[in-house]
Length: 401
Image 1 (cartoon, rainbow, N blue to C red):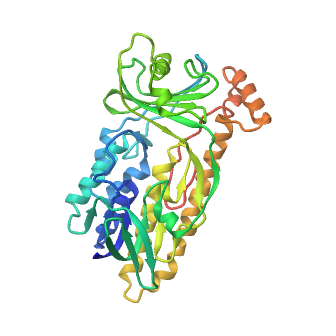
Image 2 (cartoon, rainbow, N blue to C red):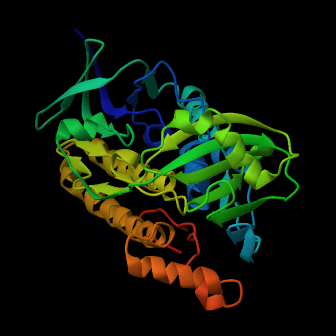
Image 3 (spheres, one colour):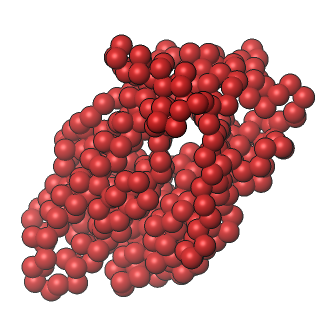
C-alpha cells in the first residue's frame, strides 16, 4: 500500500474544497485534494448563485478568480411572482453603484469549479496536489495525525483532514456524525435550457404555473442565453418520467410559449434538505460545505455558506499549523461553533421560505391561499408568498437579509 503525507488532506475538489486549498496555499501551506471521479464535475448548472462576499473571497484566495466569474455572470434586477399565468407583483432591485461587484451573479458551477481548478494548477501548483479516482473508505486518527485510506489501496497521512465531499459525504459517515433538520418530501426537476427569450434578465417565480399545476416553478437567467428552470414535482417522480414522452417539452412550452425554439442542455432531479451536522469536526477531521449542511435552494445559501466555511476553516487551520507547539489546536472547536451558528441561521431562513412554498399544515395552506388572492392589490400580502431574499453575507457569521 503506497503512502503519501501532507499537512492538510482535502476530500472533494468542488468549490469549497478548492477554495480551502487556495486559501491555505496563499499562506504557504501545502495540501492534497482527493477527488472521487476522474475529473471535476463538468455538467449542469447546479449551484448558480455567487454572492458578492463569495466573489471577494475567491479573489482573496487566488488573484482574479472573483473578477473572472463576475465578468461572466448574469445579474438580474427584476423579480416577478405569478399565480398560474397571472402576474401578482414585481420588484426591481437598485444597482450596486459603489461596490466592486454586484450583490450576486448567476453563473454555472461548472465555470466556478473550472476557474478555481485552473488557479490551483497555475498560481499555486507548488502547494496544491490533486489526485483523482480516490474514494476515501476509512479513517484512522491519533492525537498527532489522521490517516485516510482509499479504495485504490493508498494511504494519505495528514495533520488535518477536511471533508468537502458533498451532501452524501463519506467523511461525515466515517466519523459517525448525524444530520439534524428536515428532509423535504418533494422533489425538483431542473433543466438548463438554451433559448432566446424576449424578457431581459429577470427572475420569475410561479405558483401553480401552466404545465405544472398545484406545484411551483421558477426560472433564472445564465450566461450565453441559457435559462435555469426548476419545477417542483411529486415525491415519487423519476427523471425518466419527466424527460420522456413530451412531458418536459410541455413544461418548457408552458413558460416560454409554443413558437420559441429551445435546446435542453442538462436535466436533473433533486430532493433538497434543510439539515446540518451535529458536529462540524471531530478530532483533526472537519466538515465544510454540503458535507456539513444542506439547505433548500432559496436565497443562494448552499455554495455561498460553504465558501464561508472554507474561509473560516482555512484561517483556523493555518494558525494551528504555523504554531510550532500546536498551541492553537484548542481554538479549532471555534470553527464548529462559528459555522454551526451560520448554518442554523440559514436553515431558519430557508425554513421560513419553505413553509410558504410547501405549506405543511392547513393553517399555512390557508394563509398562502389568502395571500395569493390579495397579493396583486395589497403590498402586505406579498411577504407571505415571496420566495425569499438572498443571503447578503456568509462570513464569518452569516447575516440574513
